[in-house]
Image 1: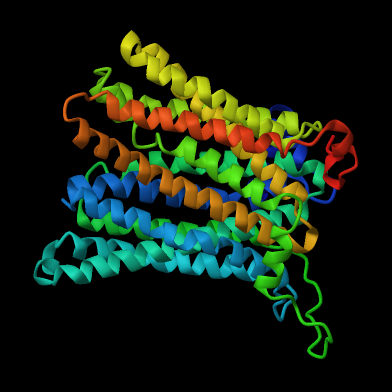
Image 2 (image 1 turned 180 degrees about the vertical axis):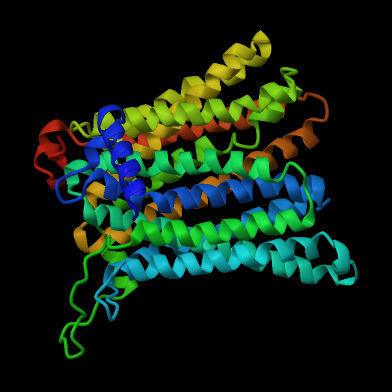
Length: 467
């Protein structure tokens, strides 16, 4: 790192120590500069998510003329790999490379897989849209190529996030982990915002050649950011001797041990219910604002910013409170409780014709989702045994990612299904989705009441000494 970069990093680290709620994540062994560098894998993830869900979503439908239904299928392809996050986490727990690393080889592999998908993607999309010389290509070629590209990107993304969070857990002591969670997800949001601005500026004058340059530039940025993130982060241990008498446990054995642990099924069920509840509205808010409340496009686009802002405040507050010993599942339950009146505000905004109430409800949804996500992830990190950190975080990620994807799909399916059955009211389909989300949040709250530890029980738990 050159002297200018070192000075900039020290200045940023000094600013964070004063003003950022997750700055206390630093310790003598792992300074803030090192944590900020590690968090670059989340910046890379945010960039890729914005590219897939935001930029390419619009480009494929508007500029390339790809049918919206086909776009939806392509964007859902990365979810196929989500259930394998538990297996990837388990492998990173037990793996020993020739150099003595556990986590780093998986991040390198995930980065290369993600790079390959992004490198292939622009050409696959042009064939899919039958642009230029691809006009004579059979349609199935473009569909298969685009599906492979999206699958590779999704696989790499899931590998990097699962193993990257496990590495962050390895590096930090239990009392610092709540702030580490906040740091990692704030950097994910930071990467999303910055990347969205950059992609928007680069694609103002759209052309097929510019699309290829932008996506392949993102591929190169992924390799650079992830390479810097993991450089000298993991200490080299000893490779397991070939003559070792006890073989490593299989995935089935480790999974059985994990499930038999401290209310693991209930914890994963709470994560799934809450994530499903908070995700179903993702494709509903802007159409609801435009169709029901008559808001202009310029105003409905602010909803994403409001929700992201609420999520940032939620993560920051959760980092501050959890680092002082607050029970993680109690924090997650509070987040779900905040979500209930938030969705009720969204519902009430229609009969009251109140865009202000609608906007405030959207802000609260982001805030509640931030508290909920931070609480469940912190609980997972704190309660995972050292030898099963990757497996535990992979299981959390698998449930969370799958529930989020299913929630988005269900929201659209339920809305369209109720609309076709009702045939008249434009409001009823939206109210059905929002009402179902309230019920799911209530179910998540009930599930989490059995997971909240009493202060006396928490004091006896190894992860409870978070101060």
